[in-house]
Length: 522
Image (cartoon, rainbow, N blue to C red; front, side, top):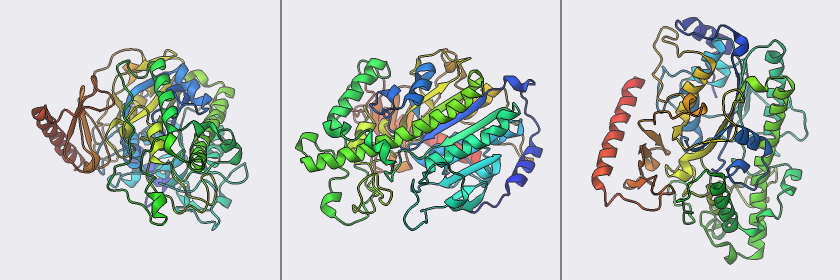
């Protein structure tokens, strides 16, 4: 990436331009914030959302905080991150990163992990320009150093491209999730030592492909998945109901193959590739296939496990510093699980540091239990994610919210939690109006007004638009489907033919919103 705005200069320029921004006068009461985002983790891929994967640290946050059962993402990496940091579905040059606002109001800010934005996001929003420290990579890279020594994309430390020999890491061999955490923990020493409130973003890449993990983590799960994706999906479905995260009238959706027409295969071994996007009953597979697919999901689980271990290291750091009661922790995934065949070859098995393997569609379908479809889709399997917040002094432990929310709501929530107002002007211009609203009433156990609409899905090909209980969604640029999510939360019964007038009404409303976004961003 070409970072044209020097970090120090960007800070001084934006900082000098803020003319109306208030904060709590007593810095000691302003909460620290840790925002954690996993990458391509499915709805049911953590323990407190029904998984068999060992995620005790995430589960602690969920069980002692609030879990959101109806939290929407952008259905893909870059729209989710763009909306997260700007509070916008769509924006332009007047988009602002909330991290910059926190920093200008006295927060020490750190970004450790993935960065990926839509083209409309200005470079002034990028991590290197709004954080005191940042270690990032753009989109997808390997977890271990590849044999060539060259990653798909370089790591960027405080705006400068570096090799891993120049990146601080404690454990050998280099593993990017561990290294991101190593640097975050080291950088936290400064604000902790001087009682300065801090914001930390942990952008973990797990469990996004390539499927790579440390052997000792893979070994924990080897054999766990020989029971197959059908039984795993059924077990997760039962636990989700027992936990109260899905309603009693929810049924388990039919198994889903990957029908995305816009994600092809790299080529080679065509017979094998033909099975990757398909759902097949587990009992019909050979023992050799079962063993290989058990390994595939064991590596995926190991990646989630490793992420949770690293989250535990950060939580321990905060606890040891005596900051637990005054810290907000937010955890969510950026979209549903990913079923796309980006396997470069099949020479190396899943987990191998020289390999570049992906999760099969049937396992992604299990990850997204109980919903249909996957990452990119505006259907619930792609757009709906597990999400939770932990704030001991404010949130009642064990809370579950079924109120719909979207990732654009986190920006105004963080501002309200910190007592900071959205600036009226930055650098001489008026920033774009935020599209979300604060979740603070929900955190306090109250009912907030439902958002007037929710948008997700990757491009118009897979767009979804929700108003209240009603949702229109399309796949592969086909006609709109229509669902009532109260009656049919897993989108089995398409009502578009029976209620054509409702489809037209919602499509018109969606087009009006899109025109508004365009006008606002100019």
